Length: 384
Image (cartoon, rainbow, N blue to C red):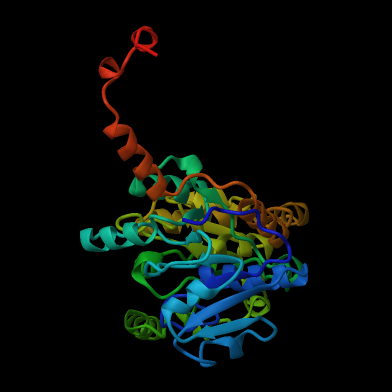
């Protein structure tokens, strides 16, 4: 097996996207995370690219002007890439010139067949999580030490802290759900909460959701439910960070009611984007979401519509986010910090991969018991 080498600025970094999948704009944190890293690395003069498989130029590159893309015809061609290889999501086992890295954007799978397959694909890859919570979750799943997993936090693009917030009426609570239209993001908890009576003579509520995730079957079904709900305004998904920043700036509270029953949000990039944009955030007290606190977050019990409603009322009662709190938030979880962490992990001597740990344990298990080994004095008594 080739050994890890220190990453030099002249080496290209290839981010391998999902097998056979195009890179869609405006659908999730892992997409924004990856594209932003490639942009920032390129800005610093470090060669970086997004690599897709089997799609040719119809791989989403048209939605990301200025971001280097490369399309390969087969999985095996990944083995011909020079430099650093980072798998962004689950990807089949494939030989690479140097040991590769694996980003851990989502929780480990729950179904046994999926767990075996995923564990096998990651056995010889150095692991990078997006939060302390995620590192602990994957360490338990792969039976490795938590310290063996690097952490590179997501970030909010600079436009979120720079966007201008229009004046608010002060009596209307403007709520935004900016997550994907999928059950694990807590959309059904949000819908149940909206059927509670939250209005009062001096306060009204509006709720906006985007169509992000509507390209998937379950997302299309949820989209139809939201369209039919009288208290929800459905708007097109935002395909650029700037568009999302502007949308957030027109709202008071961003809700992240992620479920904690069968899915644990590993971080929650929407939370830090919203706080950089001057919003208050009401999020489930679960997974990596508590790690996203930039000073304007309220944590509530997951899967609890009443708790979500009370959290919104409590957050709104605190009034608008103060300018100094927003400025302080903008200093946390920046693109500069995230890329610095990534480059540090790529350049340092990596910790053992899960497969290396297993091999070392197997070697130790094959050693004879200590009492059966020749003692030093016995060895010295042997004839020369």
